[in-house]
Length: 126
Image (cartoon, rainbow, N blue to C red; front, side, top):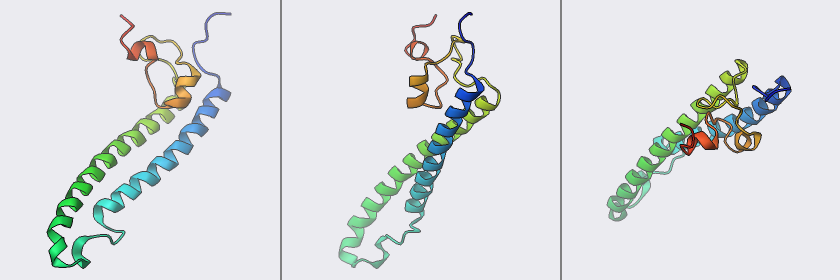
């Protein structure tokens, strides 16, 4: 028997469960970040005394910018996880897009949306 070219349906199902779990957590974190940007949690400088307002507004702006960046990263992560689910459906999940070989399970468990093997990611493939 030659080298394995794809993961079995059972293995793909294991990865699907892992990804779905990460997707739920990622969406929860994204919603929390969105809430902090829009102040839906009620924490803002509108109820503080005027002497501290200027300082707090500056800190609040920086905090919102950081939350915005984190929310963008989180949305990209969610999109990558959703793309991984599509690859599972297509039975192409876990195949390195550069080498065509299977990405080791250990890597996929750590980075379930990976599309490159470590070798390809580090530029070892020509």
